[in-house]
Length: 362
Ligand code: NAI
Ligand code: MG
Image (tube, rainbow, N blue to C red; front, side, top):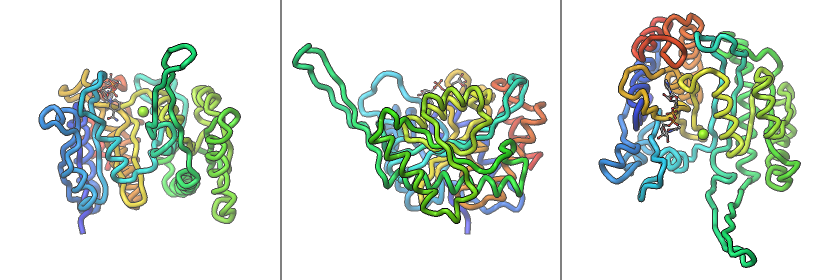
């Protein structure tokens, strides 16, 4: 039976790159049969209807779809009454507890001196400071305001994100053996790097660190081939910029993961090539890392590669590994060839040209 995928282009270039990814999915040689469902969400939808995420979108995803592809939302920089981000709500509704972001170097016209990197950042997606438990009080001594935020780190969430990190390290190793082009640059034994700051936050980060470490120790047979190391978050940033080739799988609590994953995206030349997936136990949603890019929206020059790779991640996490690898290979071939690139990578080609080139390599 067909794989049912919800498509939520949302705003701006989301409407250009999601159809591009759909075309590549539909063109997979001997690919599965897809059944695409077009769904509404986003800021423009909010402006038209007063809701950014219609209940029907949530219900259709939950009850009818196997996975989804999300484009990008425009978020107003000022607070707009009644508006909240649909992507944050979707992660919650669908229990997508991991944000998975591969960052792979691109050699292109605009990044000739690019270092070779091939890392996978796995960010815990449900807790940490993002539980949004904030309050403001008045200091009785000074009369001035004091703001507080709670930070939640649970053994439950740390354990499941840790398990995902070790399992992905093993999976990547297997894929490298099968298909050297798809996972190109990591040449050592699989490794998980735990990011934390337990020298300062010994209770919360201490629990995260201990729990992830215990995942490896709890199953020595399975994970003996995976090296484990750790990096304080501040020195992680420093090392990642100096020596990004030193990282394979990186696992982090929500806030640190958010920051280092955007930082890592800066290492590969353009936001337009960096994909992500929001992963839960029973649902996956692919999502390019970039936003709605109002500066280029409607011009037909958005780079579709982040969205195509996100569709690949969607298939990979749904178990259709061979098809995912075919997509990664086709994209990597287009990047390596470098004759058909959008302007963000120093080229002159359109979104459509890049899709055509990817289809040719499929
Ligand atoms: P952005 O990611 O939309 O754009 C940053 C810069 O990168 C722009 O110059 C843009 O043209 C370029 N760019 C991004 N994706 C590209 C692609 N596929 N091809 C070629 N160039 C690309 O971030 P910005 O400008 O800070 O935010 C614009 C809007 O997007 C805001 O409303 C923001 O709230 C929203 N946003 C949404 C995100 C999401 O849906 N996950 C993430 C980041 C921003
Ligand atoms: Mg971010």
